Image (cartoon, rainbow, N blue to C red; front, side, top):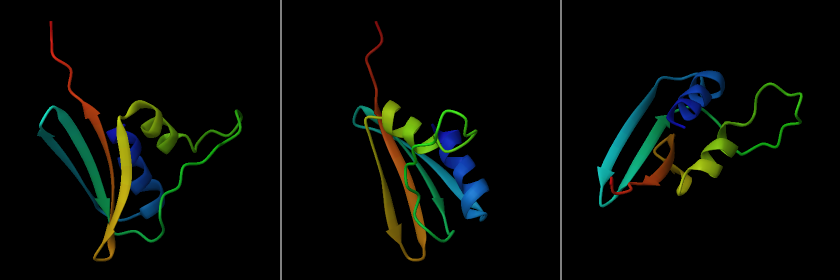
Length: 86
């Protein structure tokens, strides 16, 4: 999922980006920040379209996700809960 967000920065924002990983209180939060224009939106591509599924993958596989806008930049993030190992 992190690579999906990083790929969005490369393909759409076309700016440098920063990937941050936070591990606390039983969850991992991944953030990808860029300064590109626009706001990412989940798409619903047809089966023959080769791209456009990244945010849908993040939406389906994460426990939560969102977009924060601040100071001319945006951060797309997601969280996953950590599960105890047996």
